[in-house]
Length: 135
Image (cartoon, rainbow, N blue to C red; front, side, top):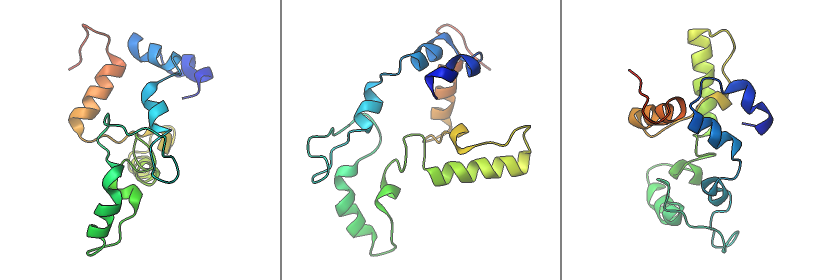
């Protein structure tokens, strides 16, 4: 989200979520934008903070290619920590077609998580302040 649009779209967010939007410096995003690669970025970061292990991709790809032809991005987070662009476009198109919202959904409206529990945790963090809850 662009900082200039923060005030326009955050009335439904918790105070803590609004505060995090104003803070444009985020160590995790800085690390994810500077990942280690043996040739392309040997001084980059190796992160253990996400469920993503690109260090074994070459070995894993060789093993998997005996059965099918995966791409490197299929083994990790894909295009983004919020889900692959292809997945988010497909979900946005599907939901727009079948549920006909008042405005068409965009891929930027979609965040893929590693399960419903994570999705609920992310939503409750963004919409509830400490001491609040939802049913």
